[in-house]
Length: 104
Image (cartoon, rainbow, N blue to C red):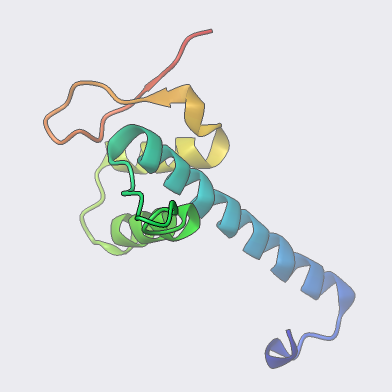
């Protein structure tokens, strides 16, 4: 916090809010990818090979920083940001990254 040199309360509040939003988005993406796409391997000591935040952050970074984002991938990432990962389930597609919204 001191490195940012922010001294105004409302600016600090906005910065922390953006960090929280980014953390939640990456964690939800990691949960979804672990559950629906490719589960993480469990090591001998009983823990996952990566934590879910890192798994989602790597996926978001790969998808958002690549220049070739298609409309389906963009809408899927935005849906992961806006709704719980349990609402999305994979569909039969050529690359395995399709989705559909579960009806209740």
